[in-house]
Length: 199
Image (cartoon, rainbow, N blue to C red):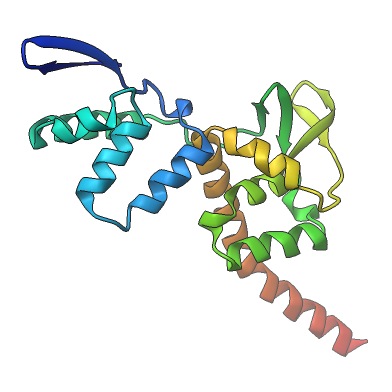
């Protein structure tokens, strides 16, 4: 999306993002961290990150102009695809979302739990590296991913370039799954305990 900014007697075109899928995980995390600061700083950083408007020029914009740009950026974010992207491509490699979260291993669960406890906003690339892994076999929409070995450092770095839209949809899906699991798990454990007591 183009934005025309007039400064003095000159008008220049600048580019804002057109789709939320243009925003990477790394860029999105920077924006999320700004939300606890001042609104003016948040606006400057957001416009600078999501456009090619120089920071100095952003600081010289009127409050009205900033409000219009921020509204346009909000509209772009609201139009994002919120359905889970089971297969993604990052830097030319296809990754698959864990195909069966019911079969998650203890190692995967322990790492996910640790990342959440230590501040999910600081560990989103790590969390994505657990949930998404290279596809080893694929036929139509069915795929197999690499087994989990806990070695996610390189993939975490790569996933900083993952689309924020893909991260957000995975987080919503995973959050729903975890909440359902926490509701079902105590019931399952109670049933198992009753069976064990009967035996």
